[in-house]
Image 1 (cartoon, rainbow, N blue to C red):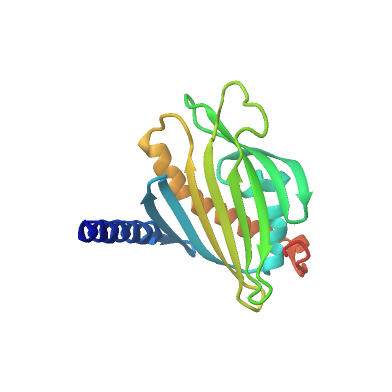
Image 2 (tube, helix red, strand yellow):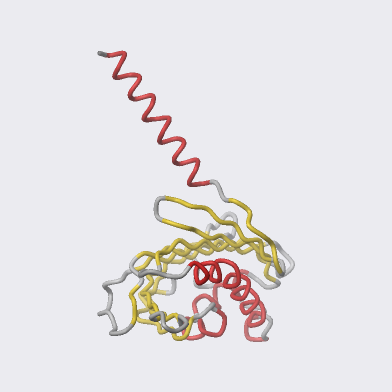
Length: 213
């Protein structure tokens, strides 16, 4: 009896170990315009990771990601964004609506974002999780119920920052395969290129990080 129990525990431990390891394995998809794209599949669905180098300080990137009203200027298919609540300099809720091609319904999402900074490394992390019930759903728009977004910003010196972006989401409803592929392929590169253009503006230069703790 004890032997059977021990074997069962061993098998369970092995399965859990393999599951955790599988969830951590990213597959390199492609590189374009200096943006490396990785993908993986987990129990929650498909996930995307981007890795790139920004020619700006970490402070500039935090400032950009804090400016919710300007998300449509750089976010792929973001038609509208609004800050719902500023809890503190390092925590806020925001709303975004995404433009989907006809005859598909647009999507919207409410995200809860927290910003942290590692004092020893200078690495800043922005972690956002969907909060679908924060405000009532809107007629004719599909509410995204599941989404997790994270930005990891690592200073590289000489006004350069390594940015790592991870997205796990279920957009809701039945979507054509080409729509999902477009979001996974063209979307990330378009988003990063738009960000880099904005970060080159004078207002994002020589900023000192005061928002991340």
